[in-house]
Each structure stands twice: as C-alpha cells, then as structure tokens.
Image (cartoon, rainbow, N blue to C red; front, side, top):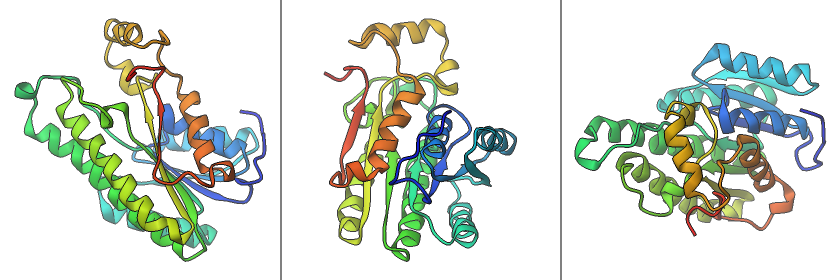
Length: 253
C-alpha cells in the first residue's frame, strides 16, 4: 500500500465490516491509503489487529473493532464506539457475509438459509440502520453494500446465498431512496467469483471451472473490487444513488 491521498477521503472516518480477509481487507487497506481513518471491524480479533498493524506500518490510521453483524447489539454498540472515539462516521462498507458450499435446494439445510439471512440480510439491515443514524447527526455520508451477482440473476445450487443477496439488493435500493435527501448515498457492488478465503475453500477444480465460465477467463482479485468500492464512496460518484456496480468479468452477460 502506498499513500495516494483522495481529498474526499482525507480526514474521513470509514467503517469496513468483515475486514480481516479478501474484499474487506483490501478495501480497508485502500481506504487508509487514500487518507481515511479506517475502523477494521470483524469477529476475528487476531486477524483484525494484524490488518490494523499493516495499515499503521504503511503510514495509515486504523483501529480494530470486534463486531458480529449477526448481532444487532454488537453493531449498535460498535457504531456508538466509533462515534464516541472519532466524533463521527463518514463512510461505511458492509462487506461481512457468509456463504455455504453450493448444493441443490433439496440438499440444503433450512439452517443454512437461516444463517445466511441472519448474517447477510439482518446483519446488513442493522448495519445500515445504525450507520445512517450516525451519519444523519453529522451531515451525511456514503455507504456501499457488498452484494453479489447471485443477487441479480438466479443461480442453481445456491438457494440460501442467492436469496440473501437478492434481499441485499432490495434493502440497498429502499435505503438509498429514503436517505438520498439527507446527503447519505447508498450503493452496492456485485462481484462475481473473487479470490478470497471463501473461494479458496471451494477447491482448485471448482475455481478453475468458475474461471472458464467467465468471459474474461479469470476470477477477480480482491483489490479490483476494493477500487470500485472506493470509487463509489468518493465525491466522484456523488450522483450515484441506489446503483449496483457489477464487477464480474462479463459473467452475467
């Protein structure tokens, strides 16, 4: 990470959930390099503090916040802590989420659906709710929700995950419409297959198959998704409201 200050990020306080790996980690590093003070929020404290130390070693400002988005009390208390420490919350990236191994509907446990909805939907709802409330008190802000191409078109063998991401799309658009008049911009990013801890667990054979399905013939790097998120948070995207930026190498074409 090299410092490349963005005037629209300088002196801003940014929250990134699920920031210990993959897209979340890359986004936290990038926002810090652009001048934001980044709150690295996650359940895994050791890994979260490692990201914070990495940011600080490269000249950025960061702090770790232990947060479980599946627990609204944890979200509420975490955002109160941010406001108490920094006096405000300007930017938020709701990246925390879970995914189960692909399986046909009839082989998917109901609990898998319940878990996906609790983290990916209820967690996102609680995060946006408390983030927006904090931003309202200081004149506005910007939020990006990490969705998925699974929330834009039906995908077999992913009933629980797809259901949760379709809900993310709906929540993003409703919240964006409500908050636009209050100087709070809310948008989403919809990545296709992206290299991360989650995808690494799927195995090389399945990942190679993913790559062959993508017109670009490769999976995304998490840093590429982070750059799109950073753009949507910037003043350059000031007129983007309720949009979903697809980053999938052409997969859904």
